[in-house]
Image (cartoon, rainbow, N blue to C red; front, side, top):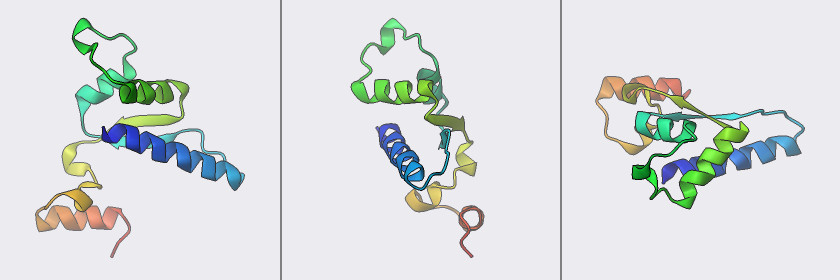
Length: 102
């Protein structure tokens, strides 16, 4: 699950920021999967979701503690797609610009 990897990196970033005496209350993580966001933010699981593994509980716990903040972003606005998908040139240039690359 890529969400667990993102949370682990966010926690590492928070730890590193504390080393430099910086206060980072929560690290925002952008997500374009609304179903995943609902499962993360809803503490009640249905009978159909009993198969959820340890990684999901790890994500949910860290979000509940406020260490990470999951935010919905439309798929077309997902800047990280530049690194993982072949995009049409206009969308690629937009993502490149938003990452600060010229």
